[in-house]
Image (cartoon, rainbow, N blue to C red; front, side):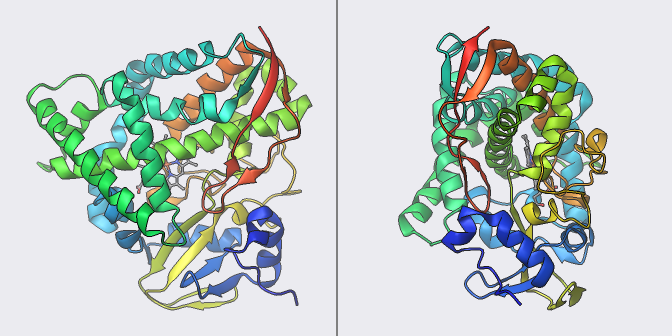
Length: 400
Ligand code: HEM
């Protein structure tokens, strides 16, 4: 049999999909000594780890707490459902469509305006990394002049979260950012409690279920989570979606002719090249998965990118096809999804509809502004193992 791939090796980082195949077939359960974690790769096992409540999120206590404080990601059971119900309505239909649609449209337009006459753009640097964070800052009702602070805080928190080698300077910087962010946001939260507006921050301040409200500290932690949960993921989705379309000119032409296909292209991108590749869980009891038993309290790393290309689930899984019949495009952004990019079950991404709305609007605007889009050079490679997408996306185009 083949040797078990090492998910922290350079070989893995260069082409995780090759390793994912070996894992699914020959090594569905691996113990990784360096990460002190089991690693699972089959769709059925990843789905089980996300949906079965025996799998807790206790591992986030040490992964997220130092930079974010306590957020819904770390919570389980009743505490989780209560907090989730407090925040989730702000990311559903009415608020999204009426209050925040203009914010999304304007932020995308402002960025495109800066390069639309140039005929070339690095879509990652000039668009994807800016758009989702600018949207969140505006949704929270914070001044546009603070966009740059948010980009700096975001980079520092992301560096902390992906600091596999334990670099001390990066850790110290992440913790300093947490303090700086608190110093910035806590006074604003107090003001909004006294003078609420129509913004997301005011909505979070006044949200109440059975007499329970979030504390200032919890609102601050949630806003900090929004920066990373809603920033990096959505920016990687935009880069991967455009890369996938430019690499498949027939599918790009189809989407250009019919913008309603953007949602299907996004769904297939989430399956084929998900922004988040690894999510961890810890079972409260011993659990039997393919390949053996995971003991209670041990960490399990769920490989989303591997599950999403499991041939037991999808025909011809390594091809990008926005019309594939075995992916439920219509429910790809709901808890009924049949891919794992947003997780499944009770922690299913709160921002999935927001991400879909941002992509629907953003990609349509990009296609309208840019004709004849091509790679400026070779197709760009993907980077990252925890999260993954092209690091740059240089494109040439004819201004429309
Ligand atoms: C949860 C992916 C966009 C907010 C999650 C989880 C995943 C995910 C995998 C589960 C994490 C876990 O259980 O450990 C994505 C992807 C996105 C995206 C791929 C874009 C394509 C967004 C946006 C927001 C957001 C735009 C909000 C602004 C959240 C929150 C949670 C979450 C608050 C925690 C839910 C809970 O614990 O109950 N997301 N996300 N996400 N996401 Fe997203």
